[in-house]
Image (cartoon, rainbow, N blue to C red; front, side, top):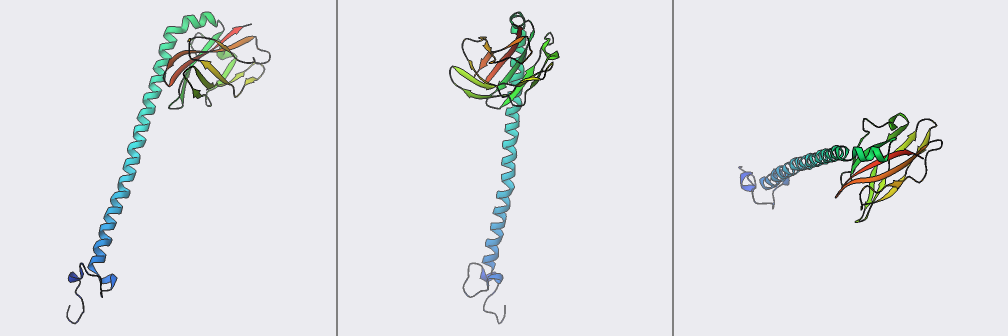
Length: 198
């Protein structure tokens, strides 16, 4: 530019004596920084979305695995459990790594008329090579509103199908309540809660 101490295209690579807002080098650095920041923040949501998608897939696989476990246990153990607990039983499975629970009350079980189960707090608290510590479902005995709330039990991993008695029974109930581990597969466990008259 005539009469000027600097020319915009020739200011590229120079900082001395050129106002920063009229310096091509400053504008180039600002543009490159803007592109890098846009790309960086544009990629982060994609990474997070991929991670969330992978977590959702793992959760779905885990839930399907515990549902299959329950179906297998029900087919394999239903006769033995009904013989042992003639008043009925409930099966439930927990995936300790996903903190997911699935439950099933078999069709031939009579306990759903007298008992109600709250599955939202069930979970594995601790797993060792010999014991699974589990937070049991809250159980309501409908006839007189008796409750088991916040029961945590340590269940031996071997031998399977070893019965453990609930510490107390609901007031007015004629049933003893028992728990047993019926399947043990790494971080997935299937349990039966059985009822029989005492």
